[in-house]
Image 1 (cartoon, rainbow over the protein chains, first blue to last red):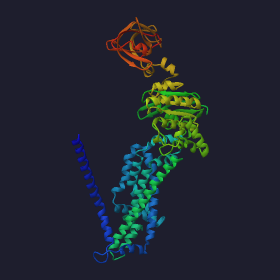
Image 2 (cartoon, chains in turn yellow, purple):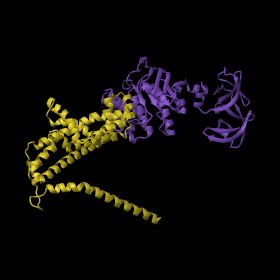
Image 3 (cartoon, rainbow over the protein chains, first blue to last red):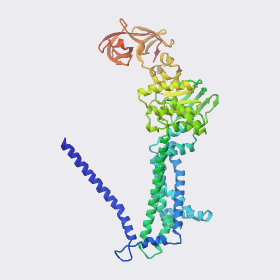
Image 4 (cartoon, each protein chain N blue to C red):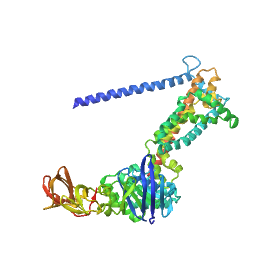
Length: 278
Length: 343
């Protein structure tokens, strides 16, 4: 008996050891480049010295384009893209689940398409459309939301579909319908609250994509935060600025997503608590 | 709320090549509870879903209180429904679930709360008002679903196998409770089940369905004691199939002469359907055999008797009589001369 227990303990120790090794290797794989980036952004003018001048240049950057307007436009873009994505995709995912389940694979494939098309090809295809948008509607960089919604499709669709996995959509919607709910009420007040995690994940992924997007904005000649940061690093001989702007962009996105995630989860918990104490 | 008359006329529904409903006709009297009973795929749930408006009929008409609602969407039909699957909204408390339909009808908060609590009292769950679905047992969830369906004072109550996911004891309790509540509120109710005991126990009338049609519609006593067809006889309750000879309106089964339910049956060999309760043990019955099994059912017991040539017959006796007949006993049987059906 003791021998068997010893064998189990040895196996458990080995398994734990393996887990730590895997975790450390992957952690280093992700962290090392980030740490290196941070390290270079703090490099002084002479070798081995430290300085905050690269970060200071971001703070003192006056444009054009102004840094704050880049932040503002990117955040607005993130919000608009999230809203449009949710308005388009939530009813679609629910409708596919309820009425046209046989189309699941087709819709999935369609939503995955943007992943398979390189950004430059997208830009070539979208450039004439954006020319019309510029001429006929608006010059604002907010018009980028059209293409960002397409780019976010693969991630958002998967997140929403996964969020819907554990929900008995058919029974819940039929129950709500029989009680007098129209389809809008069914979706908004019955299904969506039960796929809150999926909606939150879709928003996080869409937000992350918009906050980090550079190529399409730059090639279509719009200015968002990433393009502004690129302009900051390009307009100075200090190579450290390149790294400080990249780190700043990363930090900005990270902090925003952290806040969004925290607020989303907290409001979910609060609404449950308030109902329990009613 | 007093009940309304519900009428289904010539309902047709086809799924691909499968005819789910083939010209179904059914009328529910005001305040009546009708149970639709039948094997899987006979069309009973389809009937209920067409009445609820959750599916569209290919043909036919649905009227409630004389008004044609065939093309009225489900959310405007004013029907309460309890589903087979647990259907409480997981993000709402029990109270909010029950008040949901009232909120949609724009009733004030105070009135909603009052009505929700009244309905929860009706199903005996006021103490659970603040709980969520995952904090309730299956039976409690179905009770809340019933309260939610009744809270909107529906014209018709639809019950789609609401007890099938519950264990036997809870099922029996809730079955009686549904009947009590239905009688109390007087709502016209359509109850769909594949459990014959449930249908016979709860309903004013039972409709036995087969291949998209109602084979027989009648009181539980009629359905059980005077089945119109061999399908009904075999589907409702256990039935012995014994060979007999038909001669001018009666049939001779191993020496027992029995009247025929259909005296026009042509003479000759036939398979006769006999209920186990109609088979009795007697000192000098014409049928002899050996007991091969005794099944204890509580107050009564069922014995299986081997008649030889691989033919067995079931007889249902009071347990006190059955205990005197252990497996291996030789017995003589006779058949009560009730009208019998030919398969």
